[in-house]
Length: 256
Image (cartoon, rainbow, N blue to C red; front, top):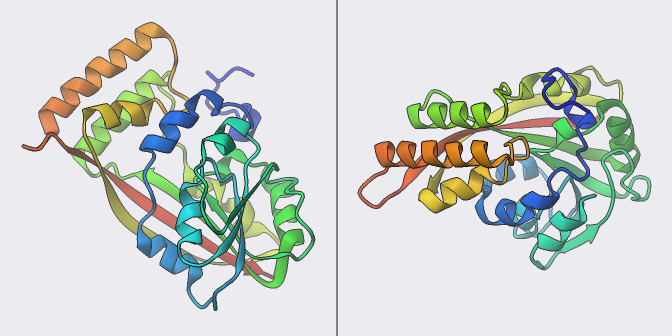
């Protein structure tokens, strides 16, 4: 599959293996989600509940849910990502995909997808989600996008796009359309939460190395690091920190 074709659906770009060499940096440098995101997802639930965190990666969101008293089944097809996850009480890891979770019918109260739904084939995924959710279950899809109103974040986005063969930013809003149109789910609303990530130079470089689209070509990597060093020097505060600003979108739906 030619990744230079930016019109290719992301779920056709080897999503099950593409993060294998990114797991270490993903674990160290990807940001956590704001507490308000977790609050919104769990609103009106009486804990404990069982949640399936689909495309759980290295367990960032799974740990946040489990820390609230949720029993989490973390579904992740990439062995390197699962192996990079730290042990955490309340999390059970399973090999599975969004389209085939291998979970029993009507077995979970909540399904969450944090920064992952765009990698799934939407139609079979939603059918599978409907199958494993209980009758009063909830689906929460979270996207974490760069807030390009912030100057530093805007330039960072431009540099990473250039290093990814000028790949445009993912249009997360369009990825949710299959859910809006689904007969199996009643779309509730989208809630947005602003957040920022504090980074020093080494963590800024580590973060970009966790992005799957960034070219591993030595020339591209060297240029990107040089550009990030210049960017960091321009924007860092007296303690050597810069701040990436995010907009977290939480899409909620119930079974129809």
